[in-house]
Length: 101
Image (cartoon, rainbow, N blue to C red; front, side, top):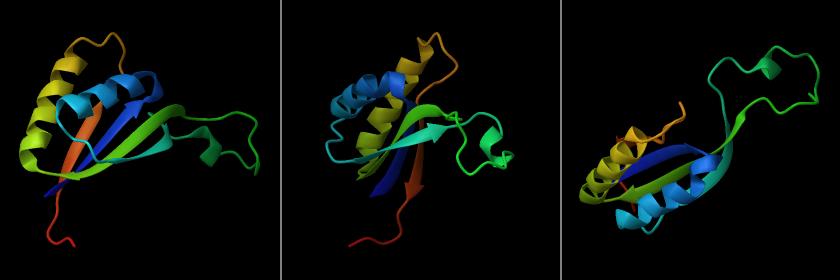
């Protein structure tokens, strides 16, 4: 059992869902997040309520799953990212799990 963490810009949400499906990863959690490539300007802003949103609308997914499914997912993501015309590829990492219940 390993923990798969995936981040994707909101524009590729549907494609990410298809990649999970093709890899037979059917159970995962997701959350809307803001992605940043540089130090967020709001950290330097003294206002409590900045008028502009600083990050890129993105999604993060977490899945506790088997290594074979993760290998398939990585192959699919690698192929997907090869054909992108943007500099926002789908990113994924794997974290080993020592214990779980």
